[in-house]
Image (tube, rainbow, N blue to C red; front, top):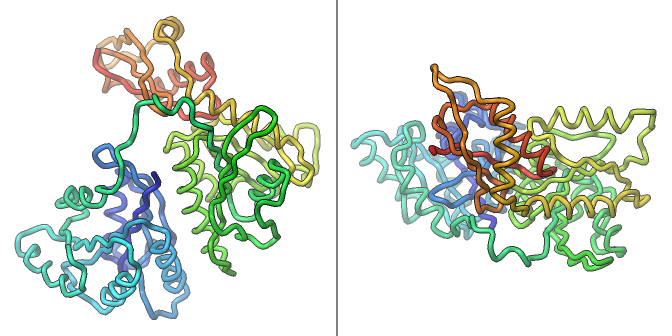
Length: 437
């Protein structure tokens, strides 16, 4: 299930601080100057075994003519439109402002569940002062402190109540049809690829970016291959605004990813992989999806001896550290290598559900560990005695060791590379855990 939460509110109430707390990282820029979050930030959060998407929006100013604030206003409205639930954040230190009233009026019209969250409540006095926010007309209020984390548990319990628990058991998914999501920026050829594969004009294709309004599911059953293709929308509404298009396309890509097993990330050969594509790529990897990168419009590129090799090298530098990903150069117009893209996608799907026998895993990996041992920590020799694959949707491996907390990233990367080179997990994120033996 795809569940998306948007954090909205006027400038400088602590939205980005709370967003960083949910993601457990400093992704959004936090500053005392209002309007620092001009773009949206996207991430994935997990609470008590439940995972959901989070969008951090810029501060909402309803009637400003400032160009940035006008953009933010549009994007906040899109976030409200696309989210399943909304955290409306206000600031107890300032009290209710006209901006809060305008925001509340907008949210009351949205019919989405709204969680009114009073921030900066870090003592008993402020807890009492928070009750004035009931006058905004939203039934329940949650008092929190974004900085210290006080009160966030109660809010997250309520917020994630509709979200199902993450399934970790692979059983029951064996006979499912593979689902491929076609994702990427507007106007890179996603719909054209879908039409070329199924041999009919299923979606509207035009030079105007964003003509695909919704995600479109197509059941493909030809040439002994069966799968579902999900064409992700650019957007729902036509807009002259490039930023809005990108925002819609990202939210839609995130939602399609939740449904998919493998993501086919289409990029324009001429423009290369953009920052937005890298964001989408990172989210897909974090969600544990298989990934294939399709470089479309390759027929328009002037070729020399090593053009494809050099292009692939530059592309991998941008998506590092997860570079073990198939990259296929295609032309949808000329139907070059589009069926190869599906072949590779099916291989990635197989790799994603691969189970390795524990005996084989130990035979190979203990030899690799013997060949290159983990560095000595504080005079202690780190020993890894046993490896097993965990029963999860994403290939995950537990290494049992005497010092699980002391194994550093370079050695973890070495183990991942060994798993990849010996068992072929191309295009699939691999997760490694160290446990006390």
